[in-house]
Amino acid sequence: MNLTMYKREVFENYISNSQIARVLSENWFSSEMYCPCCLNEELNPHSANTKVADFFCERCGNEFQLKSSKKNFGKRVVDGEFYTMINFIQDNKTPNFFLMSYSSDDWTVKDLVLVPRFFISPSIIEKRNPLSANARRAGWTGCNLLIDRIPKEGRIGIVKNQEMVDKLKVNKVWRKMSFLGNRKPDLRGWTSDVLKCVEELKKREFELSELYKYENYLEELHPSNRHIKAKIRQQLQILRDNNVIKFESPGRYSLID
Ligand SMILES: [Zn+2]
Image (cartoon, rainbow, N blue to C red):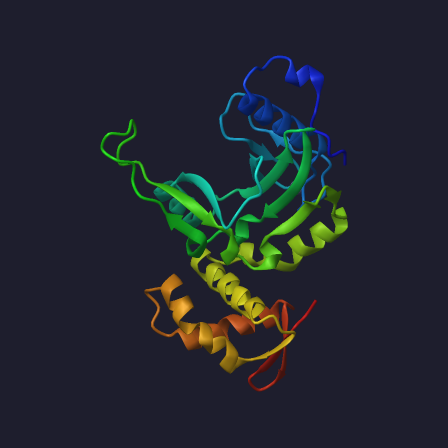
């Protein structure tokens, strides 16, 4: 993988910096990025004329959306219309997101993070304030992706500090959690949220009572559920059945690397 985005022939046709950044990052993405799911060497752009940078893998059918920025991505990533996003999640149509930060000094890729579609659940979608009555699209309501609510398996580094991560390692992390893709959107949101709480403990071994401390946090994410503790136990079983954690003794668990 070559981390240089600069290509004179792409550059020449554009004037504004934002246009140049967009074409260079999209061009780099189509020529250098592989499919993290099936390791197909190529991802195809949907159309050169769409505003959204959409790509797909011909072999496994995964869809990808590229977001690129000069700045590092923070906790919140701006996305499109809120209700569209929620419907996409319910219909299992969410794409995989690539978050790319680049340097515009030398046009190189600094960091590239993949958020697999199966980690996108209502828990990580924040509704923004509707646009004011004076706005051209008055009433339009956007959303943010709250990246810091996703467990580390859902933020897979492809390029870290201008260094490439091994493809097989990327694919292994993808496969570890891909069972979530077979689950209903609200159920997989629960699994991901509980795994995030486990990781927040920052311990290899942990106890059920420690996880119960996140009861209020999980209740905020899932306001319609009244049985949070039972739900936590159920998710631990799912994580165990899929080799993410191990049951050591009653009420005691450990993370599997
Ligand atoms: Zn693929």
